Image: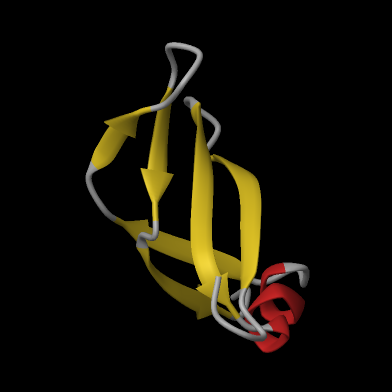
Length: 67
C-alpha cells in the first residue's frame, strides 16, 4: 500500500441484509468520518469474497448527517 494508506473493513446493514465492505488506500480522515454516527450511501458492484460471501470493494462513499 502507498504511504499513509489504510485498509478499512466494515459491515453495512440496512435492516434487510448486511454486506462486508472493504476500502483500500484510505487516509485516517476517512476512517474518522466512518466512525461517527453519520449515515452513509455506498455505490458499487458486489464481488465474491474468499469464504463464499459477497463484498463491496472500494465503493463510492458519501457521508450524510442524520436528519
